[in-house]
Image 1 (spheres, rainbow, N blue to C red):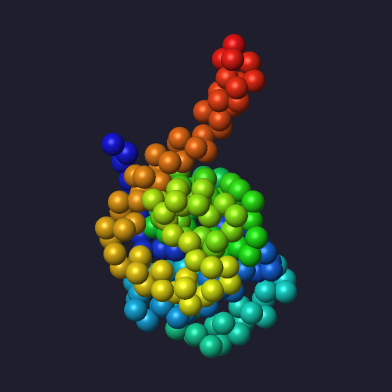
Image 2: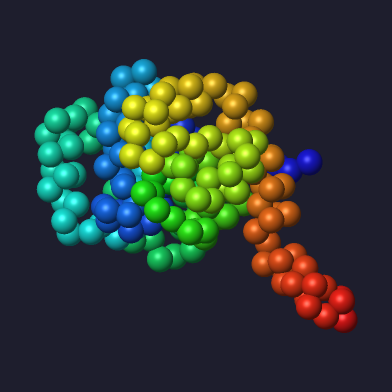
Length: 191
């Protein structure tokens, strides 16, 4: 049995905040749509903010001034221990990218027992273990994302039951030692 540390009502995203590829505007919009029904939840965005995104942020807080205390831009968190502490506290990890490969942030979130919500990028089924560790939504669809947030955030059973599954899935599929041993076995017959 895996011991899950206490988690907070937090949705976390990590990456280059505000780049077109990361589509953080989708996450912010969906959170604003769901926020009234999720009053105890916060959204935390970790990563360097693209300068072109500052106008969006300013307008966002003009339109939703009550969210200033609930939406936090953490900046570029380069200290891995501090970043891992963010994952450990978060119940939900969100990846809203318009396009994505296999980002390290997903493995980090899963290793920390986060329920992962991702856009339907090519790796969405791998990211969520076919829905066992998270959910996906159509790329760019903030309405669908808001609906998932409203369904998952208040439902302790959903994210609690996925925490242990997420950690086990990460250990089985994203642990570099296991991956390199598999490669070694395939290439050299386990020598």
